Image (cartoon, rainbow, N blue to C red; front, side):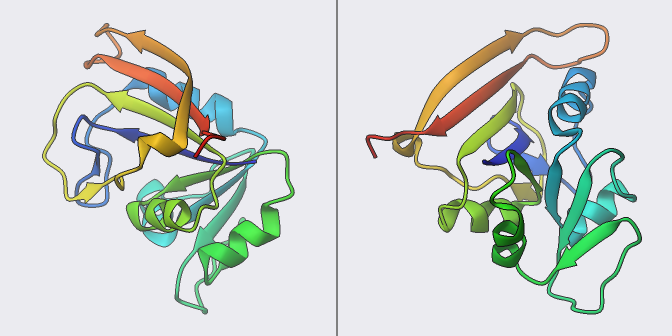
Length: 165
């Protein structure tokens, strides 16, 4: 099972200057809970924005630079080769960035979408790709409002491929 996991703003914003543009404690905790014990695949820029391998996960980096190496991570020169290497695992997460998300969606390599929708607009320079919602079925949605640790309203939404498409 290959799942994209992402937090996006109302206009599909992902980030700015290679950083997150909001801080939602609940989203970070959920990300950790959901991805721990699994393989996570990310682009080089996403890895460098995190700064280190995430603990208790197999960290896979995709980069065109065939000499790129990081202790504690596996490196692939294409998203396709990374996905092919792990596609038979019970659960693999694609965690970004925008180019990796776009390639995974366009090539139909994704089984599920796990989206945190931050109900606000932000100044951004990186956006989540447009998706054809006719191809996806919303299977779970949880809505939350602002609190002392989460400065924006947000929703956790899970989608599976729509078998009718």
